[in-house]
Length: 181
Image (cartoon, rainbow, N blue to C red; front, side, top):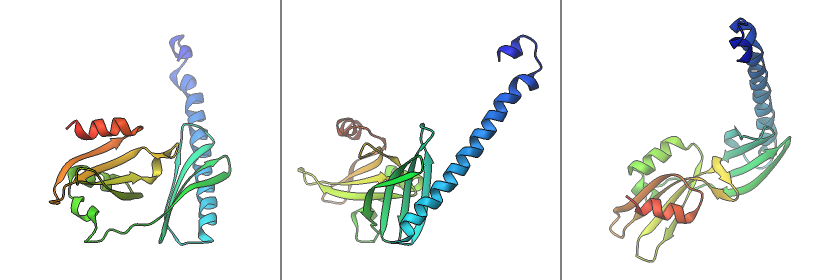
């Protein structure tokens, strides 16, 4: 930009920047392809992969990896060429008699299901008689915590009392956001 202000032609001033960006993206795509193959090689020994996600982080040599198989979901990271899976959960299928089926038409839950390609869900009975249904996007595991969630509180009459979708980094903030509506 400084060269441009001194009268250097814009092509000469910005061509090196564009060249560096092109090289950067080529390297990132090649790294992503390599890590995808490595992750599939590790998982194919045990299961049949259905979906694979290799997502870059802000650190150049660190990637998030999530793999969905017929029976399990795997979540991990790669550091350089080394892939470490830190979480393995049994897949939960959506059935008509599940609690998730009862809340799937809630606007927050529906938005989460449309946005998240690989997720898991859990139910927790609460002290007041309601049941919490929590969906977690497996692509965003950070410090043993899934940051992108959707939550619905289902009453005993199968009505949704509270719901929330968004990024959460602590349980206290989540509870404040959930009951703020």
